[in-house]
Length: 242
Image (cartoon, rainbow, N blue to C red; front, side, top):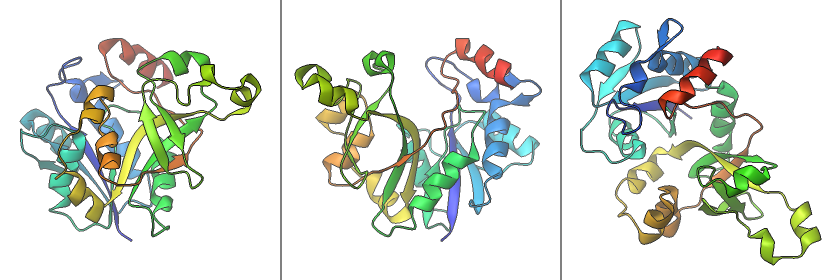
């Protein structure tokens, strides 16, 4: 099984323009993500997918593998889909370009999930969600079935523990989403052709589109979460950890 990591990277972020090129103690963020992903022995290749010449030039400068994509893509999934058409792969892992402290154990756990022939899409989930995270709409919650396939993703607490038996709710294991995705190439080719749905728009969660059209998402449990750089204020936290 040939597994390829793709790192979508765009310059025009609404909350932090140019963030792939910010300096993090002598290396750009995109270089740190790329080099971190390359440490995984399960990845046959790692490719940066970008629509910006500045990012393209930077990846070339540090000797990375990079490919240009269309300016018209709405999501990182779409960008991965374009690259997937041009590379030999059985599985594509969409690696977040704003996580400079990427941990290869997350990548490897997703890779191993595809030893099960029934898995077409996989993502990560972390359990023991805090009360603060349950209330935080930026922390995505997951409900699972008995095979660890996702039943639903939501910005709201799910299940809603306030309308259930208190003792049952206290013993229930809540899961929070860690937003790294992996897809069989055949599944990814289908996903990028799907039309957006109302449910997806309400929650602002792309994965609900895939589920709406009948695709199952296997959730792989992890205990590892690395900080991302979403806004300029996040940089100091990453620098301290570096």
